[in-house]
Amino acid sequence: MDEPLLNMMRDDLTRRVESAAANMTDTLRLLAAARSVSGDGPGADSLDAAIEELTAARDGLLVRSR
Image (cartoon, rainbow, N blue to C red; front, top):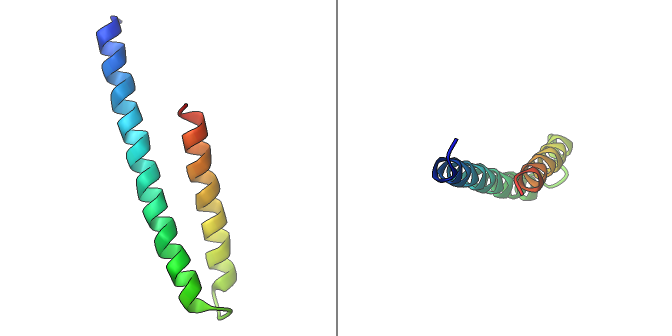
């Protein structure tokens, strides 16, 4: 493959990763808001676990993309 095509593909992949990470961050904000509203009620542990898992997945995606 030639250099311009590789650069174009790399730029496209970077945009896609950044977009996915932004979507994950938005979802984390929603989960955090739901967690805040739920207090210690039913489902709080599940929300905590979801937040932890999604945070780890997002962070892992960003680390691997560098």
